[in-house]
Length: 450
Image (cartoon, rainbow, N blue to C red; front, side):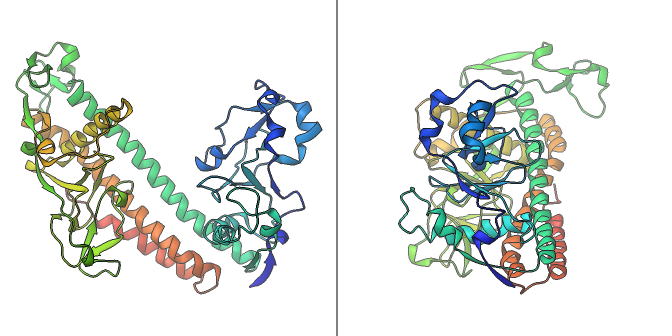
């Protein structure tokens, strides 16, 4: 390992540069976008990892006269320098619009003979940023230390060849996580579309020749969307809308077994894996599964593996899935589908969340939902044959989403565990690759039962 100052790993004196003062980018300077203009890259580009964000441009003349040294190039890193998210980092890709950074960004252009860009990304994100946050000094810049302070930070680097191998491995882990997220986004969108089409618009596939919902015996030419093809609808007083003939309006408790959470005594909480996994509320929620933070030795109310976890306090309606038997606090309720129709229940709860969200936008904020209100929420229940068809159609993708998310949890945990040990030489890349293969295999055995 070799020691360097931060100033040694950047390309030159302009390789490490804060954006121009705000007065240099006043509104009156901005011009309409054209082939000769330069984009002003803002903090949102970093926070949303999207270089296409932004609407401000400067003229080529103003760029040449005053802004040239703030130019960004493909491969540059840009860092957020203000607000609660200062220290967030993003690397600009190929084919970006020509442009400059604004005052909320720091540009880093590396000396690639000393440090690999992939290695730097992880070193900065998981180590250097913590050094920066702890060295604010006497900065007059809100939330960020002077450039002079950052330049003198000491870092240790392995040989460049080792950096390349480590950076590549860590990048592969994140690429797999990104791919899983993309798969899940697409599967989730398809599932929501089918639910909306069948159970909100009531255009489920119907065999008009046989006068029944479509199934394996149906001739495709006889199958059409129910409502838009003239299927019979009847008025329902409770919902104040028409629903398909033969469908029922039930309460949520009729389609789901519901357990309201109850918080254990505070003295029973611990972070030492003693007792039962404990989720207090939606602050523990992740993309699909909650993150384990606490345990309790005096559990009260329980959720089973595979139950839906529903936030019953603001924001009401947010859902996750329990990946283990656990204790739930008063901020949550656990729901298990009756008759095994868990994909339908999942769709119902997602649809209810959209309703709660719309009411929040309208100003009718729900601070909490009571047991009586939750149990008696009105839902439409279709014929069993339709539920069975929907479940069969969606369960494979539902389980696929679970497996992808479980894999991501494993990979993220492994990456965060490996990263410091790879960088200080405690673990070699070959050992890390072996651990990575084991982590990727583990989730594939989970959630395979429909």
